[in-house]
Image (cartoon, rainbow, N blue to C red):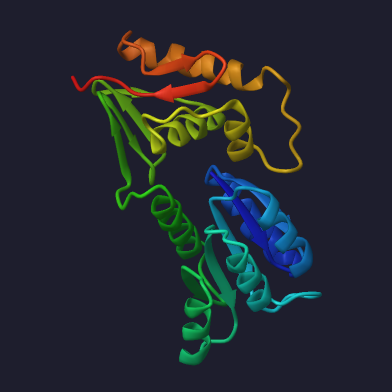
Length: 225
């Protein structure tokens, strides 16, 4: 999953950005509203974490302009202003959630995770495809009742495909959701991660779950056991 953090505090950029990356998200960071809006309009993010008090363009304006363009990215507002009027203003402007500073990182991560679930039409922490089960909160995977140990990038790819189960997902979409703007993945990196992921899933059950649609992309699907 890919997250954009728009926050002008260098300390919060470091703290929140690190916490999100350690939780498995690809994270882009912006320090002002103009740049943040440009990124949000030109990249398909799963969640936008948006501070309200920003240089160049404040968070209210970023949110309103983003919604005016038709972008439906889920937005978590960050603010030190804790009045009912501010919360109502944010929600009516198109925000999906609201978090008051100072906040606990655990709560921010939980809210981002909840917005990611909402973005893919799910309210559960458990994704199931045939005999594959993914605990998105604990970041654990089992297949046919056996634990499957995955590297972070393998897990991120599997969760993304599972959230879009039955849909053909292009390589471009995979790269956009697994790598942030600073990453420069090699041309064969997706195929390499997929190959390793398929092998590990096959150790528990050889029946294929990830299928290649030649010239189109990849789809995760399987028959229920």
